Image (cartoon, rainbow, N blue to C red; front, top):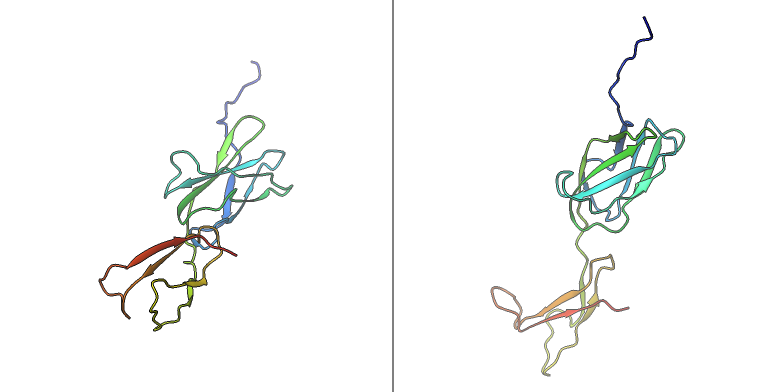
Amino acid sequence: LGPAAVATAAEGPAVTITSPGAGPTEEQTPSFSGSTNDPYFHQVILNLYAGPSASGSPVQTPSALPNEAGAWKTGAVSPLRDGQYTAVAEETNGFNETGHSNPVTFTVDTPPPQVTVISPISGSSTSTGSQVVSGTAGTVTGDSPVTIQLFSGTTVGAQSPLETLVVQLSN
């Protein structure tokens, strides 16, 4: 009798995502980290999907090269809009076997911008046909433009604005 051959099922690398955890983050460019059991010269690709599942086309695919211990870290390529995302890491080894992490679903929930009206001061009035409005607004990506609504009287209630202006932030 000759040597016996044993067929084994091909398995890809064991890839995990350890950060971020499931849940909300205020970061529009969150960092992602994890580990792999095959750190030898194979990039880990992080597939970021919009929504609660890893379906459709990824909205971003950053990658990272693991260190000798198998740890990897990467960030979003560009800022993510508020909403729910699902991340899946994958790595293909030298035998063309691909391993996938379990999906991690998280939510980007940035705080609303802080808008302050400096002029006119509350309760003031004007007798001219125009009113200068100035103030400050948030400076995070996506905070511009600012919508200004002018109302008649001291309360807004159900009335429609007399005028609505949309302005870009200026320095």
